[in-house]
Every structure is written in structure tokens, then in C-alpha cells.
Image (cartoon, rainbow, N blue to C red; front, side, top):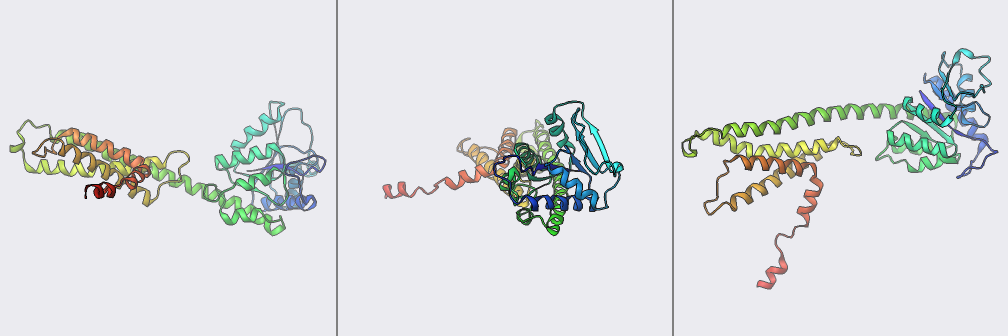
Length: 348
């Protein structure tokens, strides 16, 4: 179901001003025809003259492809206006009266039910709708060529962050001829598919994050059990010590990868890539090695013993944190001047 939002009312003042009104109305009719041909339902809010809905509904019905109850008309209580096409095509309409007389309540709450938004012209509510769609990743088309707040929505679109691709955003800047209007409709479908792929990918990331999380958490009780024996270290089977040493170096690496994967699930993140997983694992391994090495060097002239549970516990903890914040870890490493040539020159 595609929400139709905007206004082409020449009697009102808009900022930016409306442009090419005759062409805009024809483009709206072409969009309506294209949506009907693709079998999309449309959600409309008013039959008042000048609003975008009147032109889209006209093209939608005129296409001859509209199905019964495919025009969902959601009006606030007390709004009795009807589309000119209603009398002769009543079966195509699905009127849904809201229980409130406040059109804003009826309007904005309906956006949770839509699968796409078409914006042409319009004022402040069009801008707000566009920003909601961008934020909630709802597929949208914002026409640039006809001004109004739809133009401002078009300007904020970014193919690196939002659903529309660069080519789709460029198509939205073109005048809405019959062919271009069909491309806009195709763009809505392409964006829906992209959102579904991202959702599926996110689910896979969540499963992987859970597996990695369980993986490094399990190493902690495993390491504790390995060291539980009261047998002196010199008499303990070498295999147990070897397994613990492996855990000491492998577990932080897994924890780092886990941290990077969990980070990809946070809002605003672009998602997990192979490079981010590798960087997370590397950051975890580096941070853990620095910690373990520092502890061993500071434990005495004998070099201490790596066979102790606190080393594993804190090593894994540092590994996870480093993987979760791997970009900060590598920036910090890049800023470290290990050789300090100025000090060397002074000593020389």
C-alpha cells in the first residue's frame, strides 16, 4: 500500500514554490496509472481539490487496472468529501473513517501501515512525512521537478545511507513523463526488495552475533575448569596447560569479532562486512596481547606464569571491548609514535 502525499494547489503559497503545475498534475496521474498496473493499493487522505490524491486517483481509476477496494481512503471523522470517481467506481474504494476529527492524528498514525510513499509538491506535512519515511526506511519517491517540500525531501536523500540508489534518486529529479513515472513505481518496488534483503541480512548477523557471543563466553568456564585441579602446576598434565594457552590467545580474538558483530546491530550502523569482522578480531587480539604481555612482564623477573584464570578473564574482556570499538583502537595505534625520534636525537 502506497501513501499518496502532497499538494498541487496553485491558490496556496509554498516554499519552495510549486513549479510546472500542469506537468505535475499529469505526472501524478501517470503515477496513479503505474501503481494500478503493478497491483499496488494506494492510501489517500482527502478528496479536496488541489491535493495530490485527486490527480493520482484519477489516473489510478482511468488505467482500468484497479482492483476492488484498492483505493484505501482514510478520512478523519466529519470529512464527507468524496472523489469524483467514487460514484461510478464505488467497488474500487475502501473508505476507512477514523474515530478522531483531528486529521493529523489520522494521517500520521497511518504511516505505520504503508509500504511506500509518493511525494509531489506539498507543504510542511509533506516534509515531515518524507523525513519519517527516510528515518524509518520506508520506500519513497520525492519528485524534484515540481517544487514544494517534496523538493526538500529529495535534497536530503543519500544513496549511501537511504534506500534509494543513486540512479533512483537521479530519476526522481526528472520530469514525470509516462516512462519516468513508471520508473518511480519500479523504484518503490526495488526499495522494498532492498529493505527485505537488509532485514534478512540483519537477522543473519544477529544469529552470528549470538553464536560468537556464546563461543567466547563458554571459554571462561572452560578455562576455570582446566585450572580447577589442586595438582601442582609442575605435576599437571601438559595437555591441560596447552589447551589453556590456546584459549588465552584464541578467546580474545573471538571476543573481538563478537564485539564488532554486535556493534553492527546497533541503530545507525551500516551492517557487518567481512572487513569489519576481521578488524574487530584483530583489535581484540592486539588489545589482549598487550594486556597479557604487560601482566607477564610486570609479574617478576621470572616472567610470571600465563596459566591463571584472571589473565583469561581480563584478556577476553579487553578483546570484546576492543572489537566493539575497533575504529578507536586502530586510530589510537596509528597515533602512537613508538620510535619517538625526537627523544632519540636528544640522547644521541
